[in-house]
Length: 407
Image 1 (tube, rainbow, N blue to C red):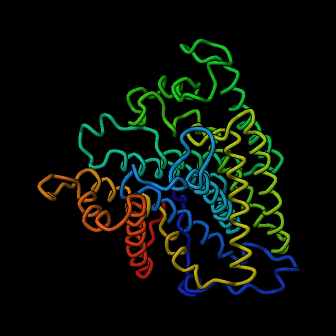
Image 2: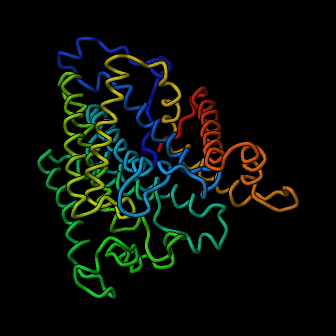
Image 3: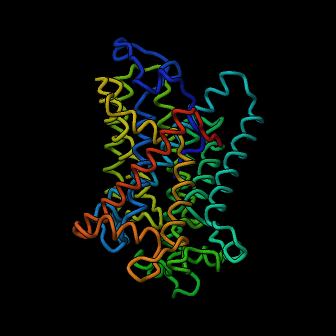
């Protein structure tokens, strides 16, 4: 879920919000000349939320908003992954626009896009095979979060590199409507045929699951083995999420005043949320299948969230609370891969003796420091918050030393 490119910075830009000229609220100015603090805050908020929901003290004791919807529907947790892709689209547009402005040719930009996409996929596969033994490599789960981000980023960047807004809209509609029609109208081999075989009440019976098994049988999500929430077919609409982020970045990069851009984000975001909720009646909002209604709804939520943060930080300059979130967002790849390796180590690989039993380090810490005095769900949340704070410390050290992993 991290964004494919680290953000350049200076000490001044990080320690405080950009000093916004009041004229920006009423007169045009190029967005490239004034980077919005809200973009970095939004990315950092998403990274921190990812760390929180991925590392509870106990998976059996979680507050409902901090876990995914069981199938159809959504929770705040279901917004995190699409928010990553959306902000990746925004920063992709800003990055490519900067490269074009300094004279890079299209061939060089395409090569860089493909290189970044491949590196993100490679990081995902390295994380999936950790601790890198033969058995894990042989049985690696090929799909994954970073793998989807790498593919979606590369496709969205290439689709929007030299296309007009009208052409991008046609591509987006084709992706989302094509996926809707395929998932609801095409018969699924071995599932009885007809529309009924595509009802979204069972993961293994959908067309996406059939494609997963046909292409990657034996290398799918371990919790199901018959389908994968980041499988190939459901990655197609995820490209649409990244493209919507690019479109938002394009809007933010116009010569319009900040007030106009902000109003546009609020208006389009609200319309997208309503559209997604209406579409949900015929094609349910579903994170595991990344349904088209889910794409539109979550992109709308991302627009409104970004607009709200912009209104707070870049219009009213209420910025004292932003530095921790900016720090979280400066090294998204380090945060994702590093926290993933740490989690697998302490949850699974590293065992210790605790009260006469051999348990994981995570279990020993959780029981000794949290469950002894807190109710189960509060103890689980306290452990997760401690994990988030630990990574804030790690990322702060990297930030102070100006160590940023660029992909």
